[in-house]
Length: 386
Ligand SMILES: NC(=O)c1ccc[n+]([C@@H]2O[C@H](COP(=O)([O-])OP(=O)(O)OC[C@H]3O[C@@H](n4cnc5c(N)ncnc54)[C@H](O)[C@@H]3O)[C@@H](O)[C@H]2O)c1
Image (tube, rainbow, N blue to C red):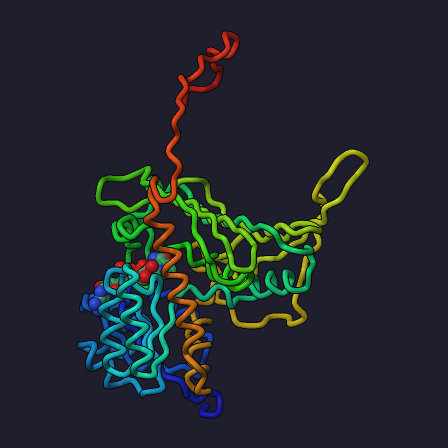
C-alpha cells in the first residue's frame, strides 16, 4: 500500500562499494526516509554485484553520481584510505557534502586541504567513526558528567584485535561477497583503522588533546606493512590523561576504564552500540582498598535512542549515526565547523600514534644490564611443548 511506503526525503550517494559498504547498507535500511540515488566504484564488477544485491542504482562515473545527487544530499566516501583524499576532494569540488570513512586523509596536509576546500565552498565535511554518538558512548559520557565516578583523573582504552595475521581472514566476506581487504588493512595500519573508535569518545568526554606521547612498532608481517602496535598517552586540555592502545597482535580487548575519585566506570566493547556501562565503587574494607566486585549498571532514561542493526561481523554498530547527524545539520543550516574540527583533530592524533615509532620523544637509556639466568629450580618446564 502506498501509505506504507515512507517518503524518501533525504538523499545520499556511495563511492566505494567494498567490504564496509555492506555494513553501511544494513544501517541505512533502518532509515526509510533515506534515498540512495547512486553508487559508484572503480571496480565495475564489484559495483554491479553490490548494486544488484541491495537494489541500488549504479553510476558509471563519479561525475554521473554527482549529477544524480541533490545539493542538500551527502556523499559517503567508503573507498580505501589511500583514495580518501582524492575522492573527498572531487566531491567537494563538485559542490557535494562529504562524510568520509576514517581516516579523513593519510597525511595531515591533505586533511587540511580538504577542510580549506569545504570552508571555501560552504560544505560539510566529516569522518567516521561515529560510534561516539551511540547509546553506549552517550551513556558513558552522561555517567562522567553526572560525577558518578567523582573527578576523573585517568582513562585506559584498548583496541587490541587479536593476532589477526593468524586469523582465517581469507574466508571473511561481507554480505554481498566483498573479501576483507587484508593487504590494504595491513599496509594502512591498525591504528589508522581503529584509533578513532575510542579517540572520538575520549575527546568528547575529556576535551581536545594538547600533547601526545606515543610509541609504535611493526612486530609482524613484511616490510610493506605498517606499524601494528601503538601505545599513546594523551594529555587532554581538561587535565585528564588517557592511554590508548591499538594492536592486531594482543588478544581481543576493546575495553575502556575511566578512573575517578569515587571509583571506576567501565564498558567492554566500543564496537557494540548497546554495550552496558558499569560502575565499580572504590571502598576501604579494614586495611584493604578495592573496587567493588559488584557493579552498578547505568542507563539513560530513553529505552533505545537510535536503531541498531543485527550484529555484522564483530560489530553491532549503526554506521549511519554520523551521516544521519550530518544530513540533519545540512537541513538545519548548522555551522559545519564543529564536525570538521573534530575530524581534523582525530586525524592529527591518529597520525601521531600510528607513526610515532620508537624515537618520538623517547629518552634513550644510558645504562644496560645482562639478562639474568633462571633460578636452578626453574630451569625446566613441564607441559610447555605445544
Ligand atoms: N573492513 C572493515 O571491517 C571496515 C570497518 C569499518 C570501516 N572500514 C573503512 O572503510 C573503508 C573501506 O574499507 P573496505 O573494507 O570497504 O575496503 P574494500 O577494499 O573492501 O572496499 C573499498 C572499495 O573502494 C573502491 N575504490 C577505491 N578507490 C576508489 C575510487 N577512487 N573511486 C571509487 N571507488 C574506489 C574499491 O574498488 C573497493 O571496492 C576504509 O576507510 C576502512 O578503514 C572498514
